[in-house]
Length: 211
Image (cartoon, rainbow, N blue to C red; front, side, top):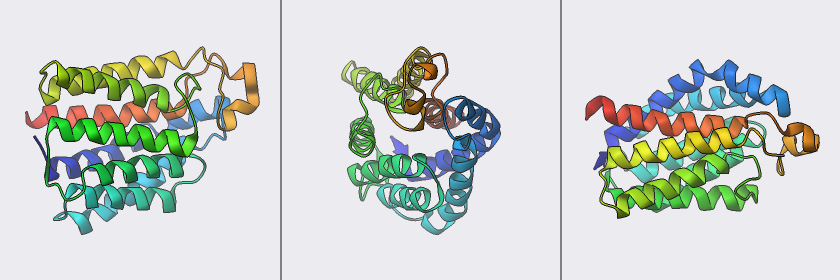
């Protein structure tokens, strides 16, 4: 089980992790985008951090919906709508819950994938955040089906996200600003996949710290 308090702590830690990696993410984006991914996400999650106080006693769905609305209103570029939709769809999947079972997390992941696909119209291999998110979702689902616990399942999900992130390097971008570069986008890590990995890994680190 993952408690509401742990979800709050995860989101607080994401704000810290994004701040620590702001320059790294912006550097990645400078190679194939607008050089603002880290800056935009940092602004968004700093705002999320301040908003969490107001939903500290709310259910997990409400917390995630607040994250969604905050990111959509404060993050520029494609990242705001994509991450906003990810958290919005995930919030609907766990609406009213104060703790999450592994099956709830499976639904969380699937809803997040569906939201990103719907909003971004991307497929696996298009060199987007989906290249990290979809393998993570599939890995967690398979782990739970095999009887793994939450931590073990998330370890496999994070490992899959890291592999997916690295796999974006040779790809030619099909979506977003990077697609304008066509073949020249190959050879660069996708910043969206990188930030998605950091956010998922922050959840694993948070849960391990209290396990």
